[in-house]
Image (tube, rainbow, N blue to C red):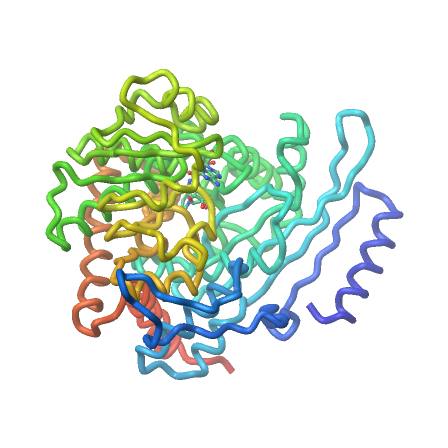
Length: 484
Ligand code: NAD
């Protein structure tokens, strides 16, 4: 945002905040020119170009670029992939910027009667293929730049899955651990009201993300519906099934990670039976992926959470380990109590185990220039969003490690969100079997489209996924044209 606009916004905010909270609404709409270019500062990137030392699959690097913001990574990935496509540079330039970023002030009456004002964002990146779609985070590190970067990823993710959506992302700068249930509900309802003009089943459809869950979406939907005068379940996805949520939504990102791992293993001639897999993060994505792969015959030999990592070369009983939602940081307890299982000294070592597949499914920026040379798996399937930095990705590519990107692997979440939206607007309910069968077929279509590009262009899985997505977006932009 330009300095002058920031100051104007701050002044308007100050005037409002001194006034009546009940009428308080601060809103500014930021056009592309108001978004600063990614802050690269003095941290100039020098990518390794193939001249690096590659003995024992190690690639030397003088990178000093870590860690990257989601926006930096998203823009670099876009430029990298665009080089493989003959797309109008104007389209690429437009895609580097969000259509709009809404910034709102969200006043909250705390349980003790005091009033605190939080900042909320909703970045809307591109809607050429349909309404914006993406999560809402409640997290202290939510920022405008992060929302923009994540909204870009949502655009590619929806396009690679061929869903009729564009990308959005938003959130409130708040630590949800500091909120009581009542405060969480009031903050959500007020945030929904501040965003009400900009969201809706045909405009922008939020979903849960870090710090928000199905209950948060139910409150959001209720607040929106109350103000609109009718029940509109399709305004958000990820709701409890009793108010229009879909069966299978919670497990969907993990299920898609498992499906894509299965396909990648088969592609590279690994038998699923006995495939050795390590999973970082035993939350919604990691635990569901690990348990499915275990059920399908793979040996999940190591899993971790923020408390530590457990390793058993003969395979863990994944169903016996509680997920993060079931019992936070239970992995270490399992490691201590189970014969044959050992705790790793450093939980991060899980990424460096000698396994066939490693699945980073915890947080972003975990495979960096510092450890990319130490990854010993042949295949990395990204369960988390953005676990591999741009520079680390180059190192892995040079070393011949196959990285299947997040925008394909964990896209089961947004895909079942799409099924939920279809069920909501059609007032129909699908069975779990129907959801899982449709998800399987959507994941295979996307996998096949990306695999075709890998083979036709001899490029990485990430570049191929971007090529598929960009091609669809560029074609839609070309057919629709630039108005006026
Ligand atoms: P979650 O909160 O359910 O689980 C996160 C897990 O990671 C927990 O077990 C936590 O202990 C662990 N963890 C955190 N930091 C860690 C670290 N440094 N090392 C090891 N473990 C660590 O979260 P989730 O919903 O499973 O999401 C995980 C990732 O997947 C995030 O990047 C998220 O954006 C992405 N994702 C989630 C969904 C979804 O719908 N849940 C969809 C797509 C992508």
